[in-house]
Length: 246
Length: 203
View 1: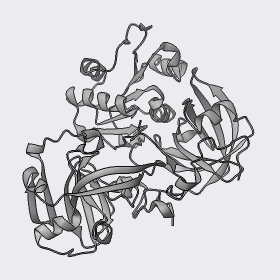
View 2 (view 1 turned 60 degrees about the horizontal axis):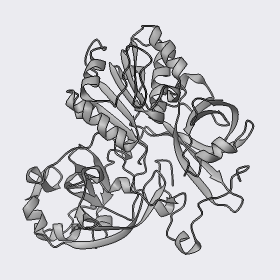
View 3 (view 1 turned 90 degrees about the vertical axis):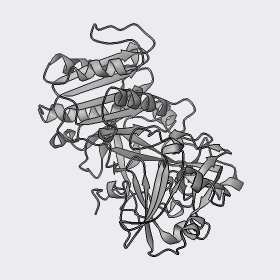
């Protein structure tokens, strides 16, 4: 009845750590039990203290399913967090971390699902969308994709060089950056919160209306952005959301 | 396996330990999670339908539903994304009182809860009756906000909170246990937090 694969806990070794922005760092994990996954899925990560206390959090996979037995998690540091400060301050290459996955069967996309796609990310909400964009690139898919990515400032644009590089290919992927607390750097971008007018202009960059829309970020971001999509004429039925909850 | 360099920073005091299911942490806020946009349902447009299979048994509008006996319930809730929140206060109509008003006893052992957004989730009848669950209309004494599932949401506090369907517009008895939205997408068919039944493959 289920699409869910078995997903037991396994250990994964950190093979590379790469700072993406002042607050977001990517950790690359070599899986001891490699699994197939779909773009947009997440893993649960579990840390265990010497007294047996465990803390668990879910993180979206940023890498494309085609990238093999190493997955990338881009983790934002939350100051009052319990797990993300461990990664930012303690975790080192060579550490073994427990994780299970892949998890989640709704906020996922494969090129066989078709499009066009409208992707809307706020801050680190771009991470599962990045997996979709990378999957499209790996597959040399012709599905038109517009990614609206809202961050506060230019230096917080996660995956910035990679996204702009993909945008420059002009192969059907369109990047719409919007900076909410800084002037824009590219003429095609914006410097305000995502609103209906901006969504309509992003839609105009797609050859046809989207058949699927994915919105990910904080709850406040997703609520506002999903409403902007609906007000721009996108049917609620094709909008999939993922919220951090807070 | 102990994680190198990880020490618990947020370990709850011992007296609350017993209230936190395995793998959960204590959350003070009330996070919002859902699979799609938040529907805005006006109470004047709201209705609730009790069905057996495809057949409607009884339908209530907002005023009729609010005239049913109201019960208070204060419970700890547990989200599969690992947060637990203590002492959430709700007021609403027990599923027992809905069945009584419809003049029936559970005709089958299983139900599907339906939301205005098309969401569904399955819960055995025994987990919804005998005072275990309600259709909540108030949270902290106030109408439930749209983000949290208002005007009315299911409250099944002893199961993971995805079972407590938001924007509820009906309960449907089914002949067998039919997986709902998340149950078809990798989440456990039953979802007992104390047995950590998060995902399909969990025992």
